[in-house]
Image 1: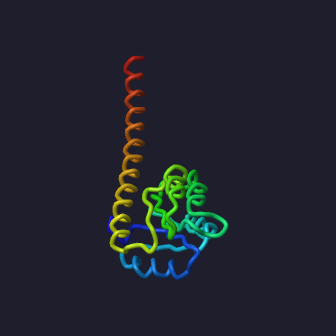
Image 2: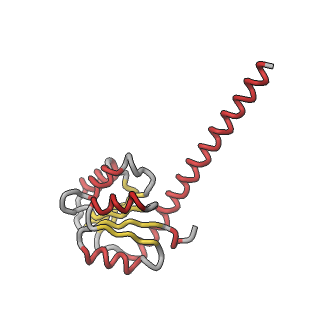
Image 3: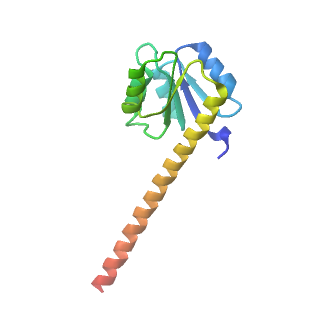
Length: 154
């Protein structure tokens, strides 16, 4: 899959950050933006998102709280947290509660973030392939068990 087919959702309540992110990455990836958790959920309902990048400090809901809130409904996307504040408790919560893959400080370095988006997508693709292969294996096992039962009966 080409980089352009990587779908990224970036959530930040600061419009200039959304614009800067889109300007930096729209030529490389398919970028969706949201200025709130509510907007982000609407995007997730309509689009297949591979990577979610969220700001930590937002009104109403933090990035970690957002990740935690969508975990059951949208477990597949890889999560990356961005914040302008060095808060070790936020990092620990991000990893433990929100299942965050990476944590970055603002302002981000475009090249570093791009590299980590590529790595995050590799993880996404491998997880998806693993899930598909497991499903195929379970299907083949069921068929083999059925054939074995038929052979034992006859």
